[in-house]
Image (tube, one colour):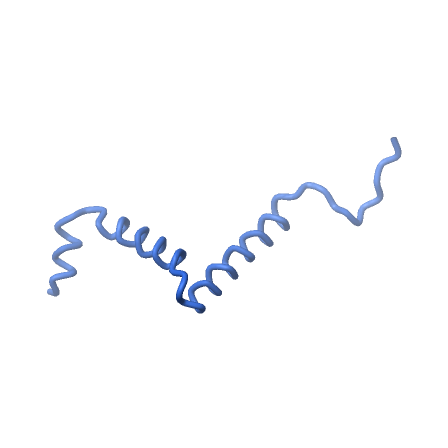
Length: 66
């Protein structure tokens, strides 16, 4: 068994903390074009999902007469 595997077994929750720190480092690295592109595409996809799934109104439907 490798040293990394023993380290993860010895400290419960270490994998989650490491994953979160890696994700934060991934999102905030200013020198890597590919990472920034992936983060921006992910944010765009999340915005499209919110706009499509959480809006309760249809702009193409006829408006009620007040």
